Length: 321
Image (tube, rainbow, N blue to C red):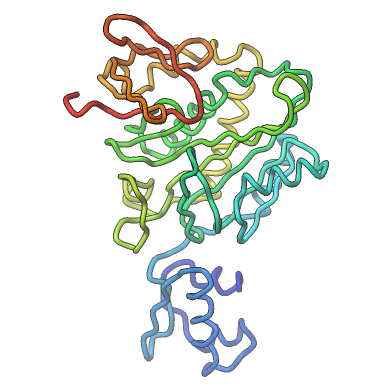
C-alpha cells in the first residue's frame, strides 16, 4: 500500500481509475481498499464524487534510499520500517543479535513508542520522526555522563536549521518552544557501562502533527509544522539530525560533556529560574544554577548548592516563577 500513499501524499485529489490501476482492482473496489488503509494506519481519506480521493492532510514519507545511502557514507548501518513496536526496542534486539553498529533505525510509526519515566510517546503514521541510533561501546572509554544532554544539542541545532529558532533545552532531555514540548531524548543501555555495553539514543521529534486531529498527549506540545506553517520534510530532517549527531557525538567522545557544558547552559531555557524538582514523593524547590561537567543539575536550595542526576527526576517551573 506504500505505492498508494506515495500517490496520495500530496493531499490532492486522485481519480478512482488511477488508484484502481495502481492497486490492480476495479474502481468499485478502490474505496474498500482505502477504508482498510484508513483503519490500519489511522489516516483520514476524503472521497468526493467526480473528483476522486485525497488525504485529509498531506504526508511526508521517509525516503529509505536517501537515508540508507547517507548513513552508509557516514559509516552507519540504517534500516527504515513502515511500523515497529519501538525503534529503541528494535535497535536493542538487533545489537543483542550481533548486528553491526552504529545502527540507525527509523519507522513511519511506532505501536508502543515510549518516553522517559514509562510515558507513552504518541507515534502516528508518517507525522513525526521516530529515530534510534545504537552504539556498541567497549572498555568504558566513551563517557556516558551527560550524553543525553550532548544529544539534546544535536536535536536543537537541527530544529534551528529548519527555522524553529526559538526552541531551547529543558534539563534533562526535553526540547521546548514557548513552554510546549517539540522533541525529547531517551537513552537506554544494556551491558556493563564500565566495560562492554550497548547504548541506544532514542529521539522523537514532533514534525508535522497538528492540534485538533484527535491526538491525545498529556502535556502541552507543538510541532515544526505548527511553528513554520508548512509541511516539513521528514527525510531532510532525519539527514540533518544525523549530521549534527555525528558532530556532537564526536565532540563528546573527545572531551566528554565538559567540553559542551557552556554551550548547553547557554541554550537552557530554565537557567536562573525557580523550579521544583520531583524525585518520587519528594519535592525540592530551588533556583537553577546550571549543570556540572557530568550533566547533573545544579540547584540553589535555600542558599546551598546541590547536584541532582538520575532518570526518574522531573523538573517543573515553580507556580510563582
